Amino acid sequence: MSLAANSIRIEPLGAGHDRLSFHCGNDSLDRYIREQAGQDARRDTARVFVAVAPDRERTIRGFFTLSAATVVAIELPPEMQKRLPRYPIPAAVIGRLAVDLGSRGLGLGRILLADAVRKAQVAAATVVMAVIVVDPVDEAARAFYAKFGFTSLNGPQRRMFLAVPA
Ligand SMILES: CC(C)(COP(=O)(O)OP(=O)(O)OC[C@H]1O[C@@H](n2cnc3c(N)ncnc32)[C@H](O)[C@@H]1OP(=O)(O)O)[C@@H](O)C(=O)NCCC(=O)NCCS
Image (cartoon, rainbow, N blue to C red; front, side, top):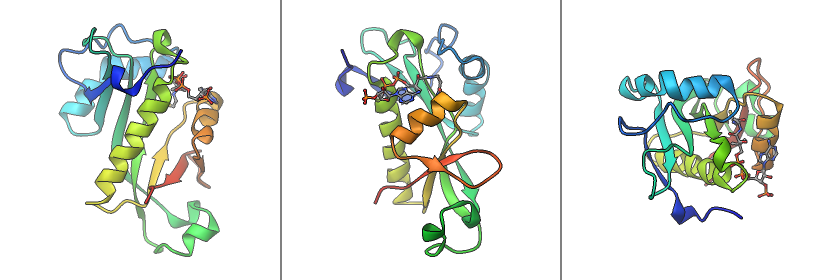
């Protein structure tokens, strides 16, 4: 069984969402949504978006964060470097993305990632951004992002990237 995109609503994290009951199996991501996400949203450090089902609007099924950063051209593949300046390249960052264990394997990770990429693409039409960067938490997360076309940056942080879709 998989979720229909219209059975899920993706909205900014708000005071009414139950952050304490979210469990994705990764301690740092669980701690993030419980302890830090609200502060990041209030302080404009990152935009935090959560997925809820219309019948249980407080329950967070999944979430992702978006912020901005720069990457250095030398971390990108040679064919991209040729088209880019030598100074830092503006990037959108999907810093964190996770799905609650109760909603795993239903296509929600795909829906969240597609929504995050779409939001970055829309933003890039106004404020230029060449790439979307992700920070995978472990090898399983790398495999997930690789499935959707992300490849490794040649940097020390083991980030992955995707060119912003045209
Ligand atoms: C990685 C994660 C977001 C996937 O969420 P999910 O809702 O179970 O994923 P989906 O059901 O949308 O899967 C979409 C596709 O990705 C595949 N996939 C899921 N997890 C994968 C993984 N770790 N490696 C490779 N492929 C994966 C699925 O098989 C599916 O492929 P298919 O459509 O060809 O069958 C989820 O497992 C999670 O929250 N993990 C813990 C946190 C984490 O690793 N976050 C990632 C970045 S920090």
